[in-house]
Length: 281
Picture 1 (tube, rainbow, N blue to C red):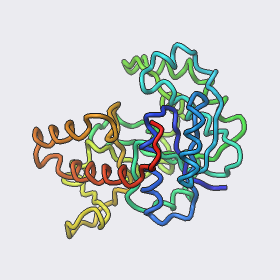
Picture 2: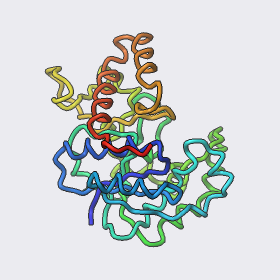
Picture 3: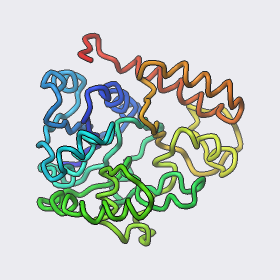
Picture 4: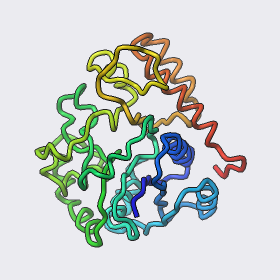
């Protein structure tokens, strides 16, 4: 089976999962959408997802990562469960999409891309962002692959420390396991497949990217298409105070965030449209 898939490792991200699913449906994709759910998530969440037409796959508790590292790593802690997708049974190919993303245009072509196709997200703004970003990945699961990635923990810790970092995430394990990724152009997808919302205006105004027609009436743009917006950071658009924060950002930055603000508004509509009548969180 081939499918789009995301991870739900924190119950508060359920609105993001539902909105992502809705955004994919609107692209007309024939591929199903699945959600991998962490072991600690309440079982009633399965029912909410399945009633929306989402395939649910429960994944085991991550024991390869020390408990204190999971518990003391903020909103990144339980995302180590993402590594389990690399050995998820029942799927030949997955296009993994983070639950804080929305899809703007059909991207089924990714199923024809090789294993570990991904984006060095933000590279056109930050020249040192050369590593694989784990928000969007093409994965061909293998039985022992997840164990191999988990085993890179010591190497990943050393690499993060060498870069001056402190917190470790699933993305660091994946980069440690695939050290040659940045030197393999065939695996590097166009920036439009994983575009941070905070860089949206720069990519459009400075680098010639364009939004799909339904999101922009601006004529004359023939550059690369932005297919996915990634709402990075710990505070998501569905969380308390998000509207106030976004309007403050608009007030502070004006036209420099006009496209970001437009897509934030579109995302809020998507969140509303995808919210079920009975909502557990």
